[in-house]
Length: 151
Image (tube, rainbow, N blue to C red; front, side, top):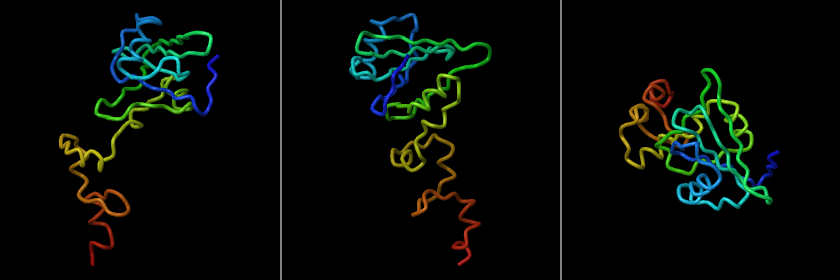
């Protein structure tokens, strides 16, 4: 049984992983790619390229544990946004949903404001944002309907 507490973090590896790897291979991925300590007690989630299988590596004070799941039928594990620049961390409830096959793609999306600051212009939703006010980004459609537009 996985004993999670408030301090347990769940990290997701952004790049696809060869799930033929076992303890030593996943241990090295945690150290080199995620740059974390595998003995920390945190969970490290790895998904294969086709998103049909998932492995979780964690340390429970007696040794390393691997938990694995293969989705059946048309079910797939959720995609991870490759443009999301921060490290991917899930809450305990998000991990439960992810492990059951829920779609968490929209969880890892940079806001239009942060993308605009990075000067990435290839995202289609940037064209809809024209200005950022105290209430957050407003679209051109919202500006036309706002009472301020008629003043």
